[in-house]
Image (tube, rainbow, N blue to C red):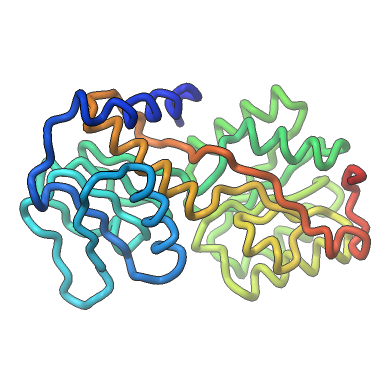
Length: 280
């Protein structure tokens, strides 16, 4: 989905931005937020501090909101912002959004972590991990699952792709996977993330001592064993580096992963749930 050296390229492009990119005219660069809620605001703050260029901040939450016609570059945070109709030719990077309509010059900041890094983190935490069930519906897609399987082959982990139509399919799938998985991972697919689905997975995980790896740090705190996922600020900073690279004339992959993703473990439940995790 991406070249692992791209983040370094983005950083170099950002540093050289003022030297190799034409000056921006007023209104040509915009940051579009699905709303001014915490996650999008946090991503925007990291974006602005990384890019350090004047940008028009737009709130897409009001009914009838439309993108101004003079925009040439845009960063969209959230599904609502990413799904708007942008002027033809707009170079857009979007984050905190599942699959959006891709147009020419559109680039995604992944909500999922790099497959190799994720499996390395989970294997370090759970040395006996050999079979990992992965729950998803549409996002991040077949290509991500294929990359995950390749990474699994290298790490000695069998990837069991458990694609579901809806959260209601989870109980049956969990029953069918009993004895066939050492852990399970819910990918950041909005179609499967509901309060009831997280509660179900957390209860199943703790009752059966099978680690549940959550799609975000916040959801991990609701009962999962751990999470390895980019946070909102990391996504915002990654979007800034990609946009800088685009303006600097660099070739940009269609999907980029945020940097510095860290593994977070639910220490409060580690002992209670008896998960087979490495000692601290």
